[in-house]
Length: 466
Ligand SMILES: [Zn+2]
Image 1 (cartoon, protein in one colour):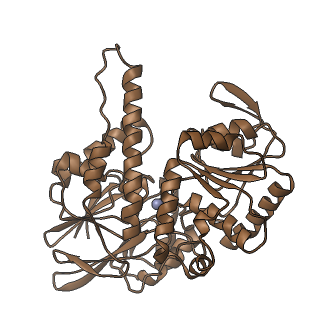
Image 2 (cartoon, rainbow, N blue to C red):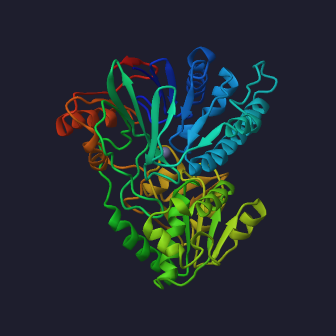
Image 3 (tube, rainbow, N blue to C red):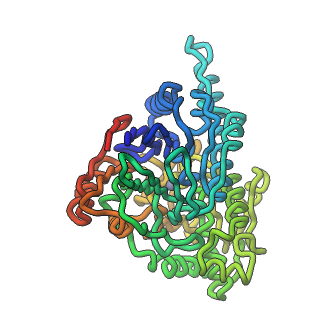
């Protein structure tokens, strides 16, 4: 078996690995590299060329986050791939929206760059792909149910619940090589146990010869998930008592629906009054509809709550898709909740809401996850008392706080718990999808605590025969 690590190796973006066995090649995920523009573009293009991707028999897509699906249109565009992309029904719907949004952003960005450099003797840049390319890709999705084994050539493939976002899965490959049965476990992104709406990750039920595991938080420990709900309830009660506006900068996929879910649950349980809640993000709105359409993917708690009400589309929830609807929210008085993109506060509709709320003592800004350094979100999270938005400075008088324990990814302890039943002294582990320090700490623990034969941290575009 030959494995080639085409992305998310010693980094967290661009998840993609090729597995070749008995003449069949599978691509596991095909995510977009993000980061410094030139370097990301070079990596995105070089790993999708025909000579790299011309022998792929099928692509297996774990979930619809951009760093797992965002390079798919390039494999079709640059390498002419027209084969199947296997994924769950939830992932097909999420990825379709995410890819179209990504294509639109790329077209806008390249238009802007070309306008800025016009007359400077520089060659025009073209987008990595267009909305039309994204549509070609979406037609290749072939949906598979969780737990249903199917085959590509001589390789058996099974997708299982990863508990990360709607539709997310991890992947088992099984095949016979040299007369011996072999198993490969690709974790993709594994979620936390006990998070709302979606089911918990299903712990592996067999030993793996080879594990390709994520390590996003390989060296960290999150706050317990049981603390999230009471902390958020207390904060909401405080917002309501002060008649303030609560601004939540949030990812459109997953986090927006989770926050909406908590609020509607509190209202249904009579813990808070039915205050107005706004989802202000075109993609957040589309994803909320998709979450609502896939109730079969909910966990039992969520299913029983849904039995009582249309929880993500309750009467107090307004979904703002157009910019006119967004402007109307701007003048909304408290108490209310506004969930808007983006989580970094570097762009997106949340900026307009921040300009209205930051200088008001009764308003609150709540961060619901990790924010990258050198962003407005991080500066606010770190307690800045004055920030610049667009072309003016704002004094920060609003309460700015962070809800602990919110993460889409399992922490180190949870990942070890997940991997334990699959790991033996014969297991060769490849630790990917993490910054190098996180991956290395985690690799050490996989050997020491789970007894794996080896755990290495592969470099980008390296190959290994196992
Ligand atoms: Zn993910």
